[in-house]
Amino acid sequence: MPIEKFSLANSKAFVGRELGVSGWVTIDQQRIDQFAKCTEDHQWIHVDVDRAKRDSPLGTTIAHGYLTLAPSTFEVVVKPVGISQALNYGLDRVRFITPVKAGSRVRNRIKLLAAEDKGEGRMLLTTENTLEIEGENKPALIANALVMAIEGRTSAHTL
Image (cartoon, rainbow, N blue to C red; front, side, top):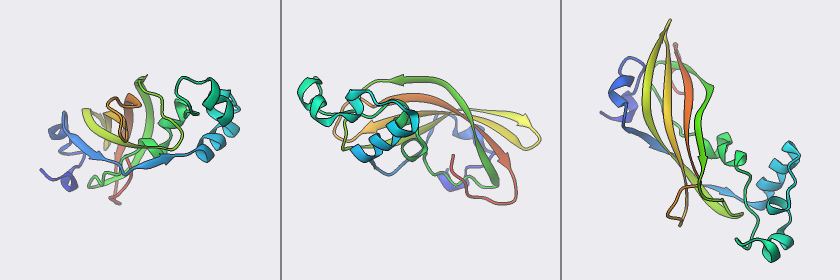
């Protein structure tokens, strides 16, 4: 069944299947610094390039774990038929496995774990998100995300 046919009506048929893979996103130092500014998390391992080169076993700065959960790195565009809204409903489980070094490229591989009918045209989708780091054997993170998908008249939204 092609992914273009994914809808709330047939979502249970997609449980256990990969829904898609995002494009690559570069996590550069500028993005890390902007995140640090927004969150007021200026720990040296993230923002002090010279000290990280000198004192970090990784030899460089790394992205904040929560930055790797941000929409630009975490979402995968799926075009479910008939879904007008896809709302972030939370996370059930997050494991940060491998640090993301500044300058690395990441992408999200998403698999549908569950589709629970909530009535009134709503379906709670649970997805497994594996954030891969280009050139690394282990992912940056694996997280189970919850999305409330709502039926409507428009069709293409990001899950």
